[in-house]
Amino acid sequence: MRKRITYPFYLFFHNSIVVNGTLSKTDIENETNIEIYFRQHLLWKSVIFSSMISGLSILIAVISGVDYSGPFMFLTGTTILAIGIILWLTIYQKYERNIQEYKAMFSKILEI
Image 1 (tube, rainbow, N blue to C red):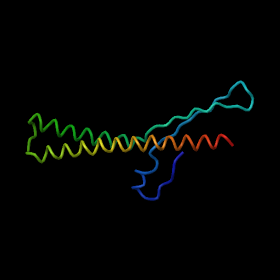
Image 2 (image 1 turned 120 degrees about the horizontal axis):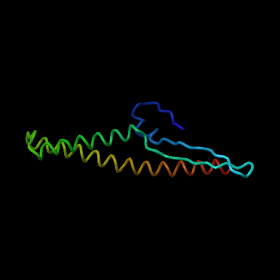
Image 3 (image 1 turned 30 degrees about the horizontal axis):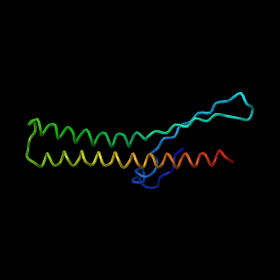
Image 4 (image 1 turned 135 degrees about the horizontal axis):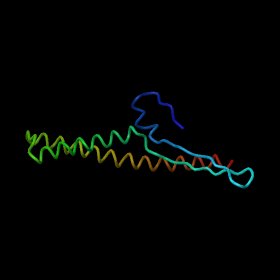
């Protein structure tokens, strides 16, 4: 199930959850078991982990003295790492909220 997007920056607001499901028959007639799985989109994972890994690598390089070019590098690494952590927390909250919305929508559809 995907929501269509109009502009590229809408990708950060839509299509962030991948919903997979399976249907299986039961012994009772006119009854089906439904299993639904939610995952985070691969783009979100790659954005979060790439910013956190690049921020950590800059900080490790600055602390170990390999590529020390002043406080600017330390500030850059800290900023990139902080952006990654903040992005991770906000996206996780949005992910949980969207899962609850999808569960409510699916339960309303299946009640009918």
